[in-house]
Image (cartoon, rainbow, N blue to C red; front, side, top):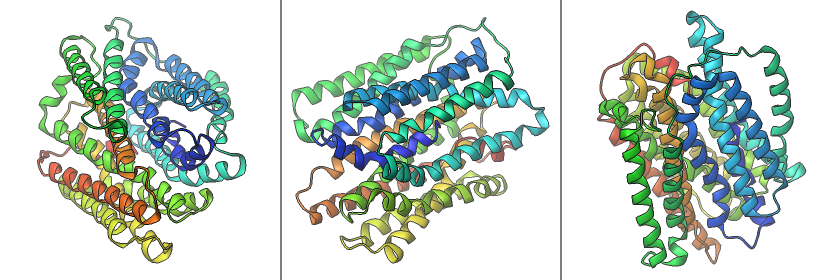
Length: 448
């Protein structure tokens, strides 16, 4: 459910625009970015809280919070209420995911952990792959509220079964309390950054409000970094970034995610607004890409183990950039799915499958095995931060065009932007360290 809600809402976005027609795209985009910001900001300290208080307790708590957030979203009478529900959802997802992996690893002997982690990651990849189709079906049959309601029966069953079969897990309350205030600062910094980017075109980039918002972003970010350097259990352990491979991999992840998340929502908006596809058809139209990702991710991890991270990541970035350039150079206002859209979707799917899982593996490859979990969580945070910024920039690129030709031009600019981010991410990957570890295959499958 946590992975599914990263992608399924994209398909529901056109329906949200119709339901809340008086709200701008910039405001509606917060339905997506609020989840990403909250999820990314809390992921690391949620994992540390699970270590202190017990993984089962935090998993069940996160599951309950996620379901409450889903119910709030489904009942939302306004966009503001819906965004608040997404914040609650993101908090629950941040608690569930690291606790779920901790429970699984504790339940099996060491020799089976690679298999279990692979299965855990595969379920996440399956959720991402099926998100567009499931979301399109739910919106078509019952409306956008069913995108959130579908979580409730799953959550109830998971909670009932979890109380019977999940082990209590170990606790270590002697550890210092995680820096919850630091998480608030990074959330506020990201929120102000996204607000400044999305409202810049309408308020004016030189407007005092926009300038004040960006100043607030810098100040909040500075306070956050200060706390990370002085708190015993920081949101981000800055010492991890002393490893060049870890730093480069997270920079590359952030850049790549900016283009990736902008493309995910942008493609749905293009199909429904320019080609005038119904939501069901739009969801089906983008599904081949995630299916390709799910099918090649495992192979990409094995290949990276044999030849190293850099060659695989460069191939992936090249494919992703080429697919986005195909969109920008070959797609017009006339629907041509089989000859123009589908090839680009398959090419970008190959690029994503060769890149995102391996970026996660490369991020932790230079760390001590005991730091794999926190390193992986930081990489997930980089991905969510990049995604929030990418969605904000999508609002700027798409704008409010006054005709199909202007709309097409705006989407072309969006796809060029995504291609540039993919290429820049690939350039960054050149500077990855060359050291390889046996854990590459395992970690490549952790973060779908």
